[in-house]
Length: 450
Ligand SMILES: Nc1ncnc2c1ncn2[C@@H]1O[C@H](COP(=O)(O)OP(=O)(O)OP(=O)(O)O)[C@@H](O)[C@H]1O
Ligand SMILES: [Mg+2]
Image 1 (cartoon, protein in one colour):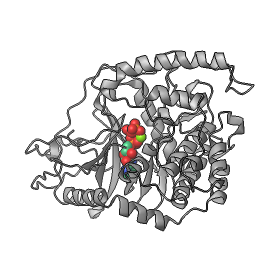
Image 2 (tube, rainbow, N blue to C red; image 1 turned 45 degrees about the horizontal axis):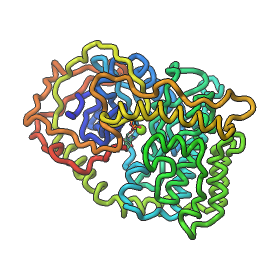
Image 3 (cartoon, helix red, strand yellow; image 1 turned 90 degrees about the horizontal axis):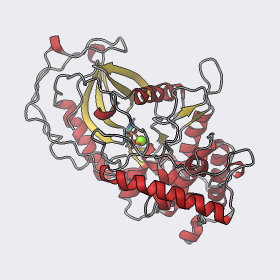
Image 4 (cartoon, rainbow, N blue to C red; image 1 turned 120 degrees about the vertical axis):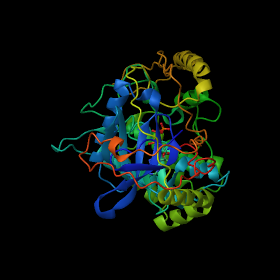
């Protein structure tokens, strides 16, 4: 996809990734007196732009993540609006997602002390999110709800950070969530999330437990075959200890993983802080320097190529075309895990099937995963699939190579340049015409989805 337009002081340079809901770009922030730095711009996919619920959630993401101040959370630093489109501006973290790191390892496992560092970082960030107070000093009760390797970035500085509060929820109620819709990624959902009970921070602890299990064993825990399999695994199947999958793994880690993955949430760690403490004791974390060395070694090619592309774009920006306002169409969407377009119909049938099957299974074996104070186990019978008729986004697992830009994109003249609406920053200063770069023509090294 073509680069977005210049938005206020933000000049897009390079697409970094394209996820389920949005594309993420490295952009140049241009300030006064030659000040410039790279930040990240998140832009909603065009077919979601006019959906009211989605817009509200996008703004919630900005509000929530700007309130959480912690080194393991990537902050949103600005929101821009132009021609009806919203853009989130975040700190740029030179990083790879944990999912990408795991893919690039090709079966090699990450050493437990490095896993311990990465997951402890995430847990510290999560704890800060859970404990966040609003500006009046009241608890926000934020729940991330989508903790997964795609939403963890492991920086070249060796620090891991949680991103993407796109479906996060705060009890102080920001935007109403759609009833009957599963939000999150299937392989990382807690049982109570699948059963659509009231959620609290412990769903994030379960999800972080899955992330820990997978990082230790190097394989998927609940999503080996398909989504039905994942849901059944989460609800019913025995969860193997990491040391039974990988002989030689310290058994101290088993207890930590088991406690995080308790189906009864009362038996889980009560807080992400407790979880981090137990993990640190079970297996002392490596230093960030060691994690940085792992990232640089395993992802050297990806990082090197991205650096050169960014430098090339910085020196010779391909100016984006002038803005064309999006038509005001309302579309109904379900904003949750991104299915591959072709997967949607089978997925709908699959979820209905798994709901029925699991409900029967639960009845027959008389197992209850609910705490005494929760309502009975019912799998979601509503259709947890997107009702999008517009062109769907690419799956986050699929490559996100933007198509070729037009050979010579028009250069916006200063008088017609888009004006920032939301943030009172100085008017855009389009850079002088320069030769266009062909960096987007063939770029296998863009972040391969989150
Ligand atoms: N601030 C950032 N700095 C560097 N890379 C980032 C940043 N934010 C996001 N990314 C990259 O972009 C990817 C997608 O980001 P994000 O999860 O916010 O988008 P998304 O559309 O919500 O994705 P999904 O719906 O698949 O979760 C991340 O996995 C990460 O690789
Ligand atoms: Mg994401």
